Amino acid sequence: MSKKKQKEVSNTVETNVEEKESKINKKRNYCYDLVIYEDDERFKDQFSALTDLKSAIWIRHDQDLTDEGEYKKPHYHFVLKLKTACTISALAKKISVDEHMIEPIKKSFNGALKYLVHFGRDDKYQYEIKDVESNDDDLKRKFEKLVLNEIEEVDKVISIQEFIDDAEDYIDLGVLGKYVQKINYWDAFRRNMMYFCKLVDNHNAKISAKKYHIENDYYNSEMRMDKELKDNT
Image (cartoon, rainbow, N blue to C red; front, side, top):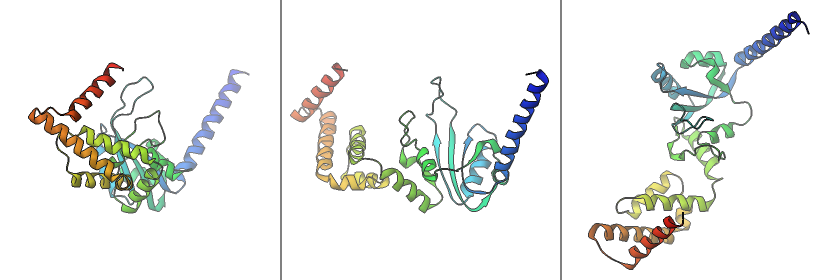
């Protein structure tokens, strides 16, 4: 193929791509996802404009890694479900975000919601469900139901147990109950109430042992188990 012909083909491909992008940008959609970065000088205005839209749900990502293993810049993922369809161009202008940062959700709105916390993506950092925010209670409940219904009970139990184990002071059962309600793990908590009561009692006994230098069989046995686990890793 001659250089002239190659150039003509290249120009044709570029034109087709531009026309396709133009058509996409002019098409009206209700649902979009997009990313904004904290180091953008327009960030405050962008964030304010986005959270004023109905309906929006978002989360801050600060643990994402590049392919080289380096941390990406902190950014926010937004999923929008607009009441009135609009084009990418119109939306970009309204929220002061570059058009290439905005994508219409064509396939799965539920998939976009799950991606907020990287749900089902074990190759990525798993963000906390409680860190997702929204200005629409119905949309927030949809997200929580979608994600929590697919989390096995054993994983919920482990998560609550880790919260107890990580506490540096005494744990009140009432406070723990409020915590599990906040993260929507009440179903697993209620069905395993006796187990968690025992864990709280043991945790508080351990705190007392440390605080008052009390020697007891429970504390000593746990210390031995911790040491054995560390020695075997």
